Image (cartoon, rainbow, N blue to C red):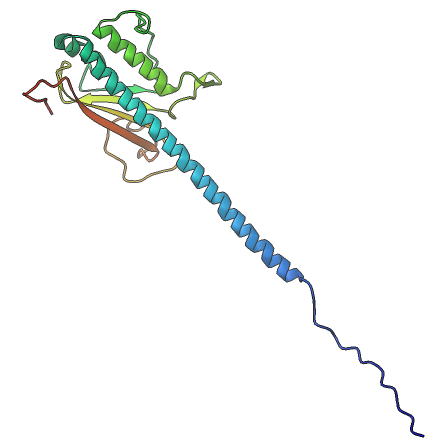
Length: 216
């Protein structure tokens, strides 16, 4: 009688299952790089939104001052209007910096009837308050407006005559820029080479007679 030998089972290594430490480390690195890129994108997006809001504010303020000047010309005769523009432009260029503080005029044109000269002074006072954002303060500093703004008004005319007038508003941006404009407004107050300066400018002709046109 033949006895069959029993074969003992052979233990063979099975295929590895599950996730190894190397796989986990690679996944963590890839995830970290993705999150870092997302954080950088959010920072850039936040800076872009901030710059856009500042530029929009500068545009609104510039056009507001232009409209105030234009409405002032409609209130009074041309000769008085020319005199009132002397308040806006006593010389070829006038600059209003964030370090300046205009005293409140003696006549509040929101509650009193003003002549053209009084209205011009009141317009500049209100314009400065909006420029600085005086409705919001922190540690005694106006923070509701543009960041370190400077407003300039220039003209090619003299004595407030009808002609071309330019309102320029500059402020401090968050990042450096190259190839800055040659504008003199706020020159030297926004970096050695004005690399932090942002500029918004609007030009209009005021009180131009017809059909003779206006000075340029």
